Image (cartoon, rainbow over the protein chains, first blue to last red):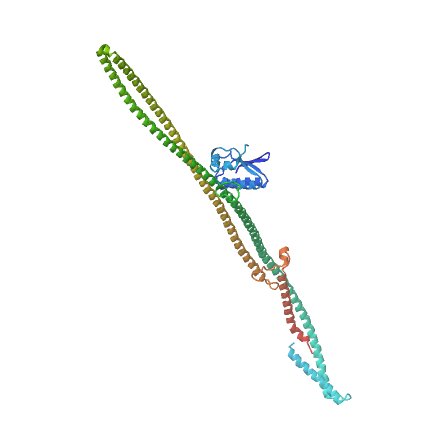
Length: 103
Length: 414
């Protein structure tokens, strides 16, 4: 899976480039988040502007790592959303859980 | 020479010597009896025979020596052949054992690799199980569960939030309906009252108009009678005129009232229009509320579908874990097969080792001791074969010693 990270100030941006819609892409997304967590990053911003779809394969990982980062004194944010990803977030009220952070 | 005749001759000669000695002794040394002479002659013969025998034994001994040398040469040749056979057997068995060792090492390496695979798989399974459980817990908590007694990381669950939204939407819709219903009731009541009054006014106007008409007719009649009466009718003519004015004023009032009634009617119509507009708006509000409600329920349905999908994802995770466990089981079965192969090789080595006489004989389920030379130094001579060689040498030497017995009889005497 294609993703990239960028450090800005005290936040790390994880840019996702492939849709998270199956087991493989879900596992790759999880691996990327796990690397950031293991590295000790506290605040991570998820940038989904490079993808068109995300389903439960990605949502489950977001929830799992939201708890992990919160438990570690950190937080997960999300870059401003659009399209189907935004609809999914709004339907599942994830837009109220993950605060928006401009990147 | 044949050993029995030699014994007889020796006995005869010994007897002759004894007789000679006895004769000499009995006859005394001064006189030499015939028996003594005979005895001496026999003794002389015996001594000659003895000397002859010795000479022959010497020849036999030399012959024996030559035979021993021949035997020794043969023994050395046999020894060489045995050594060669030993070396050839050594090479053959060593080759077999080397191959067996290679097989064992290959199996050992495969076994170690398979064990590492199993360990890695099992570690992966444990890791996936832990992560799967963690993800399942987070999903269930976010979508459905609320922590009792404390606020969870996610706060209220999604289902709870959606239910609250639904309840709010339903309540709002209900309020709108209630208000609308009340308004309609009030409006209808007021409209009924207005209509009733308008109807009353119309009736009143009609009466007035009737009265006005009759009054005008009456005033006209009075004016005619006053004109007929001449000057005596002037007063009556004035009254008639007043009555006519009154009639006209009544008519005007009636017209005014009619105008007012019409105005009221217009007001009622306007009110009706407003009411319709309000009702239309309320209907739109109701539709919007209904739309919100439907939207909320739709979101609820989508959320439930997402929950189902999330559970399906988690199920897939655990199915993958089951698949990994199956792979681990297959690896373990391979382990069992490898163990059986190892057993066969070990048995083979054991049988191989049993071919070597002496030394340690390995039991079928024990790994045979192939000797220190084989593992570290393949070129070392085989210990067991050397023992065989030594035993054979001894037997050959014993056999050679057994053949010497016949020749030794010539020189054996009491």
